[in-house]
Image (tube, rainbow, N blue to C red; front, side, top):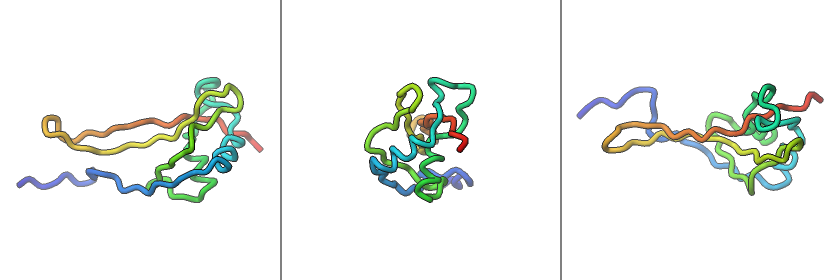
Length: 108
């Protein structure tokens, strides 16, 4: 029996947080533009906006949205990202990453 690798969990324990439509609209109001319409300025992951609004821990939170958010500038879909460790018999340990949309925040 081999010793398991340290520092690489097989499954990251997360807390799913359901975001209602009102919170999603509020998050959209903090956005100036997104990576689709302004790639040079978009550098904040959309889930950071949700972390701020909900007070949730960004290390362990996965958001469940009622649908994608929308960029107020170009109307492109804005999504949150996530990653998961998994193991396959043939290839060993792998990580699946679905990146979230990067946004540029308003400077209020």
